Image 1 (cartoon, rainbow, N blue to C red):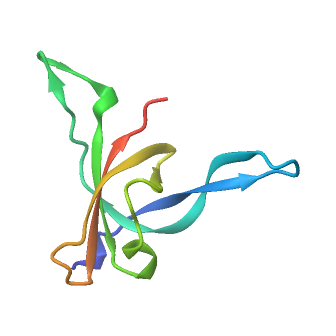
Image 2 (image 1 turned 120 degrees about the horizontal axis):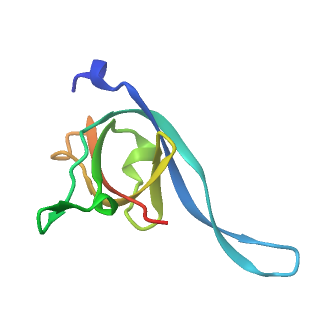
Image 3 (image 1 turned 90 degrees about the horizontal axis):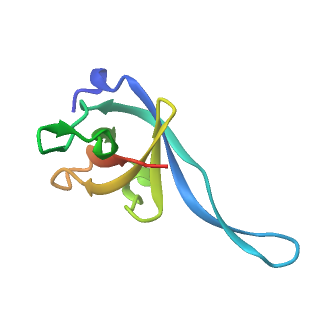
Length: 109
């Protein structure tokens, strides 16, 4: 893995359940881990000769560590340059314990 290409800072957020003083449960996102990553260019789904910007996807390559190996697509998301990306899939890159590729889709609000 060429660590010189890891130039972009991303923040991985974890879904947590918080309980207030009267027992109400609410879901919320809190920072889990921040690291440098290689961000592949945007891949856009095109339909009927028009570009649908709500379907922008991006792939991040990060170094493998204990925190990144625990990622799942349901309980984590990525924040990058002020935008939020939901994790679509996580590729352990042949389980060589060096690099993890996180494929994400831009969150539509």
